[in-house]
Image (cartoon, rainbow, N blue to C red; front, side):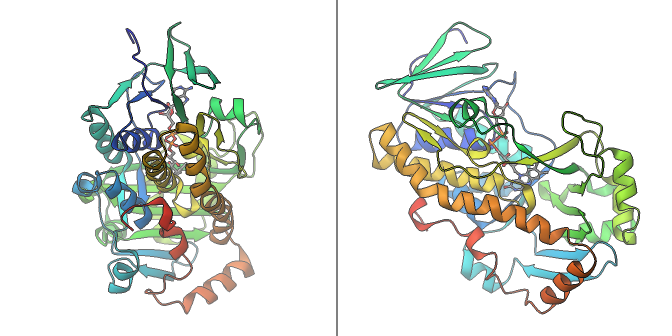
Amino acid sequence: PSSFTSPQLAVVGGGIGGLAAALAAARAGRQVTLVERAAEFGEIGAGLQLAPNASLALEELGVLAEVRQTAVVPPRLVMMDALNGDRITELDLHSEAFRERFRHPYLVTHRTDLHAALLTACRTHPAITLHTGCTVVRVEQDGSGVRLHFAETTEVLEADAMVAADGLRSVLRQALVGDGDPVCSRYVAFRGALPTDRMTGRMSEIAASEAVMVWAGPRMHLVQYPVRRGELYNQVAVFESDHYRPDSDDWGTEAELEERFAGTCPAVRAALPLVSRDRRWPLFDRAPVDTWVYGRIALLGDAAHPMLQYLAQGACQALEDAVALGRALVESADAADAFASYAERRQARASLIQTTARSFGELCHLEGMGAAVRNALLATRSSHDFDDISWVWTPAPDTVSAA
Ligand code: FAD
């Protein structure tokens, strides 16, 4: 950047969490500067599930209508047995019971589409300045403000306060919390979205249903759903590697993917060649911590509460963070007070979702008798029974204004 002006709030990281936080703070009346290390803003080419708590947050941020233009509203969330192809259970996302309970839709979207909607809203907001190619390496704070230092320039960004939304490997969290490296789950994901017209046979029937399909198997699963008005079909294949070694990338390979999915039912085997192989994603999380705020510095999104993806809540929780932050900034003129109130509202809920995501992964990946018992128990559930998941899909009332 040629030169920074001094904003009230600096946001580090231009992912879904950082953009949403910048938008929420600007809508709360603050001048915001957001810095992103990448040369260009962007997201990866895969899908994202947005439960009703996320669509409510998007409404509060003023971008729900934009996101809905391309998002798909899937009719059902279906859990299938990946080995025998039987239906285990499903939730009816178009039912009156769903609508009455949550009042906001369950959406599935392409990450790029959600990111672009947030980016456009930030770009067009007069109180937000965006900078790319700025890697924060160090932050100092005192009683009056924060100073951000960058890898690319000797220039310093001064602000009253700062939000660190720099993701799973947050350097700012590392400096403040110091809880070591993220925890590797030994699971790996292969994922991506392909044109739906490339799906054939049974695959095209499943894709046409527009349902979110979760094929659960022993230490592995496959998730499928349409995105971008149904033009693209997203698939995520996940499995636990038998060859995990720390400090090595030679585990969870494509060959192992083939091997681990070889014994699955015909529908899953038919899907496998159409699972994106461009890149493998080892899956990490961290144990919850109760220190998200250090005076004038607050952690948000994956920097605060990185979680495994089994409840599909990482980005949803980042959006909830942003809305809660915006509300706290409206209520307290002092940034440190607002940050303390933001953390107070968000920590317990996000932490519980973080730990529940681990358990949900275990439930999904059961083998043998465990899987048989799970299937038998879930078989009796009604597709209109949301009691188990309702707390996850409903934000705490004091974090939203329109609930
Ligand atoms: P990030 O997206 O990691 O953004 C961090 C940003 O900060 C990046 O742009 C990075 O370049 C920038 N940055 C990093 N360091 C610096 C620095 N020092 N200086 C400046 N900038 C920096 N969530 C859901 O809600 N629903 C789902 O269906 C879902 N599915 C998932 C499936 C998989 C396989 C995985 C792995 C995750 C899934 N998630 C899902 C989780 C979700 O992707 C994340 O929780 C979410 O993207 C986190 O957003 P974030 O903005 O906090 O972090």
